[in-house]
Image 1 (cartoon, helix red, strand yellow):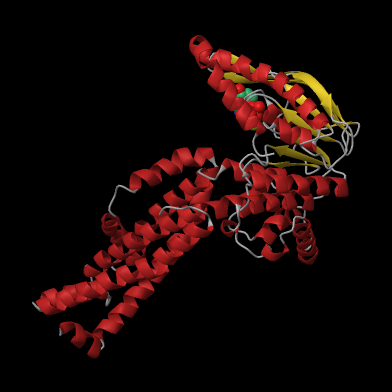
Image 2 (cartoon, rainbow over the protein chains, first blue to last red; image 1 turned 180 degrees about the vertical axis):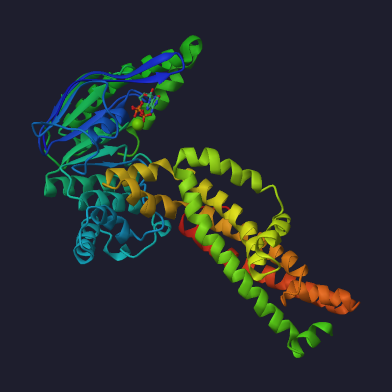
Length: 279
Length: 213
Ligand SMILES: Nc1ncnc2c1ncn2[C@@H]1O[C@H](COP(=O)(O)OP(=O)(O)OP(=O)(O)O)[C@@H](O)[C@H]1O
Ligand SMILES: [Mg+2]
């Protein structure tokens, strides 16, 4: 599904007046494209996903999907969160069936479908497991299967792998890439991890610090699977990191203000560290 | 000795059965009313502000204080006892259900929404199960209140239950019987609490991924 955002703006009420979370967002995503979104914390990434998912309404601007204005929540755009958000009282299979049940699909059909998607995420052995018996990576896979089972046009992923350990994350990167090339879903993927964005996306967008605007955009024209040791990957990663670091610094300056100079070195070091981890 | 005797002459089993039947009825009724009421209170704001505050206020009243009113309404009857039992259990079940409903993790609600669920479907398929751990805790509390209310209620007239047996013991000046009946009451109350509610609570909490009790 093609998504077109025109002049989207969103403000929230806050203690001292209003907070402009997003401003002048113009963005076009073509069908089957894998777009990654990076930006400093609080710049409005989740807000943007919420608007596209129909959870939130923009104050200004328009959202057009497949040439038609979109409003209300819709299962053509399914969101995946940082936490798996599975229903603990259901088994893995029943979780995957949840959306299908809501859509009124007959029992037999939805069970078959759930099994097929759990197979796609390599969880065939765990279809009848309870959620608390699964590891973090397995839970996130169930969440992925649950979203895919609805056959949405768009997957909206909000830092889906941020809570996972590095090895699990690597594995899920491969699985997601594979699923994406198999199903040709349009994916909008939010992350703090620049290497992750470069590894996965066709395009990486950098959002600026408050208010969130699209600061810059990088096309990643590299063949998959992408090798982190490839010099092109390294070059583009450091370019994006530099852009992002400027924005992170801006926020840090606002928040730490006077003692900014003193702590600068350590903050930059740790920001760098977390961005690079896990790849 | 009195304990054994009571079981041998059949007076204890009969009293236990009578009391258990009463509590099953009263407690069952509390569940049937309390859970839907709590679900409604947690959902409909105006109800919460009106009925909800009344429920909270009434909870301060020991349920046996309903007995005079119950007797005025229903006479010295089964109905009066049932009423007291219901008043004992109902409020804590209602309050716990409402609490569970209001504390549904927002993330689960968002997940339900993105998966195409809304309104009453979300309420039945997400909010209710999410509230179950809290509901079971309320059920457990409700059980102990109901049991106490029943015993107090049975004390007051010829009711043939365990409470009545206590009163009979007193009238006969038979301390051994009184103590034996007390032991039975404690044992039954504890048994249901441990064997039913604790087990249920632990299982649900584990499954729901709530670590500490
Ligand atoms: N419902 C809300 N009410 C008020 N303010 C909000 C609300 N939702 C978000 N905000 C504010 O809007 C800004 C953007 O929030 P958002 O969650 O979109 O950021 P983010 O880029 O996803 O951050 P992070 O990387 O930490 O997840 C933040 O400053 C946040 O405090
Ligand atoms: Mg966010």
